[in-house]
Image 1: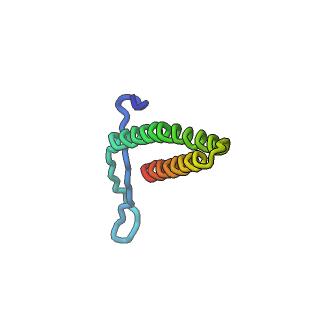
Image 2: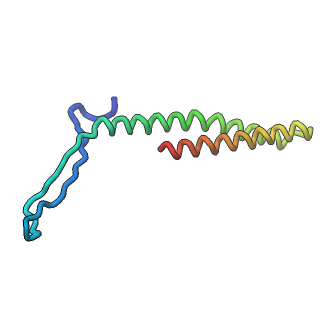
Length: 105
């Protein structure tokens, strides 16, 4: 389901030179760590964040655009003021969602 062939393991490898008493390199010391599960969780998190981001931002963009358009065509001052408030609040909400999504990724 994650797009990786069965049996594939993701490794994090770290290596450093092994030196003798004169400082000459005589070998390598390395450590490998299996991060397959961590990588899979990270990929699922990124896909989830993309879906949530789209599902939250799309309707808010609609509210911003429609309320702004209605405010521009509204003749009655009280209604126009309320529509502008909706536009301002939805814009702030869109900024908040964008900031949360940016921090999460």
